[in-house]
Image (cartoon, rainbow, N blue to C red):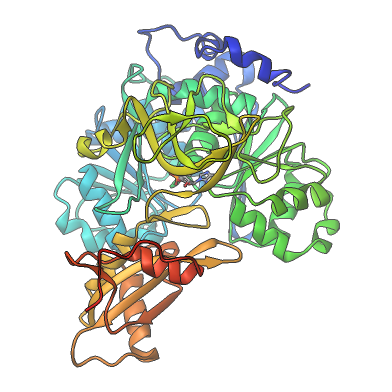
Length: 567
Ligand code: PRX
């Protein structure tokens, strides 16, 4: 039986108190996400149920029960507390998808500190700006990523502790570096969990905008109320499910639906920490008997590219429910998934800022391939006119996707940047920064972003961040970065540059520039193409017009160029 039943009928009487009741939460109570994800599940009689099934490189396998993750959270929490980390201190998780990443997430939250997960693929510059902005006090990492931290530590006076989860005695440590090996630590049975409240900060995720440095999206423990219910109703998780969320916890999907949602429901989840290949993914699904699979359009398109034949080599009949997030899910991908898996991928739409799914397809609802579906119960979604910011109801007309504030997982501010946070609201609406149309049946059809941010394979890349890295190279005079179409990733990063006098364009220089910026950016943000220009299109006031370069790449009309300075 599905959790959903006639969900559409429930929309009318929806109230978030449904979730509060199921979680035994009352206004004013203590609410700690890590307690809900581990201690409470144990108290409900599921201490011996598997919480995490992990498979890493070289076939390493590990399993953790809910009692194991409860103890690990206590043990890591106690270790951090002993170091002097207190509530609201920022603790960065900078690890591959190893078990310690998931367990540290609980440990940090148990002491009321704020967890700041970052992709381990980030280069030192990307890491630096985010640690600097958050004034992070501790970072939990692996030996393999230590060199990046060492390069920037001197510029980060707030960063007092570098905790290494896989330290080998023989290696020497530097100032501020402390080893911590969970397997050698004595498990802590009784632990005083910090009594966080609804509005206590929990998770700090960094997201890229068009201008300025990345913004730290600050979430609170109350976000659990949305994350729990959306996981239950949209991902339809039930007690005997084996769930796989393919997202890295450096990304909000990997925390809201890759840790908090499933574990607060007491569901067994799987993690595959190895490179992507269609065969490896299908084998994992078959072996672990995965029933619910939450993934992303780029991964689905990569699987499509690998062909239908390979699907037949595996028994994937265990799959019961599939969902996708992060970028537009093209209708072909939905049709393909129905053909090869006998199940459609259900598209879900949300953002780092929203903390939980906002517009979605849910089981039992009529699916229109290519549409993101409808607003989740309790979410008031509208399209606003881009000039007046007034909602309209005309069908087929494109407007700005906006939400009435007030759902539990809504961000509470951008870290140290409340001004940017305030800018996200107009006429009492939260502006998502995306555009869409809506059809007669209330289904949303995504049309694009309302800014220059590049969505490559579901990951947001700020053109500003890439342009800044390019400008630091001695040969580069000016740079402009836009999205370029791509069959699998939908968009990839393309850079246009002009050179300083004395530098010659060519492959050799391109290689040098690429090697230079690789150290600063994450692999995802690396340009796939660099084009040399004599000059970049600019407005009369000197602002580079990315729009023109974008239109050129996409073969679109250039539009109004009245402000272009073409002299
Ligand atoms: O542009 C939208 C796109 O991804 C953006 C949010 O990215 P991020 O904050 O990294 O969070 C991604 C995971 C929740 C949105 O503003 N996006 C997300 N889901 C969809 C989407 N675009 C089209 N269809 C979707 N289903």
